Image (cartoon, rainbow, N blue to C red):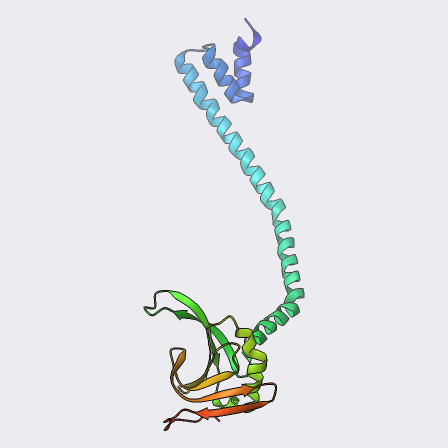
Length: 215
């Protein structure tokens, strides 16, 4: 009989390495069937408890060793964030400035089809006020701001009182009148703006009356 078939080796295997021990015990039919069942259950429970304890200890050690690293990383991130705050504020200021025009802040809005089911373009809505409208500010807008919107469908200057100006990109002229839903609904005046010459030509539509003039 080989050594691994002997009862003493099977018992040692059950204690030291349960899977091998239980295999040898059942293969070589050590003890009667009831005895094999009892030994399998008993040593199996011991094996499971031992393995669970080892795994739990390793997880605790790993968590303990990871915690300082995590704290260091978080501290470094906070430090980097603090150091970058001036740059971040500068970037935010640049973004805010990019939304400014000579006539007020602007936002981009969708142009929808007739049934309002599909976006077909984009227009610019400038939030303005009559106090900002002068010949100088209109010339400044046409010279420095209007070229930025060449890819848009149109530009509306909303005066916040029901009136506004309607520009087509890259064209130094505007229609003035009532605005509704982001476009001119009724025109009263038109303006040709000669930015290079620094002058403006005003034209009043025929029959226009009872409205609030722009300039």
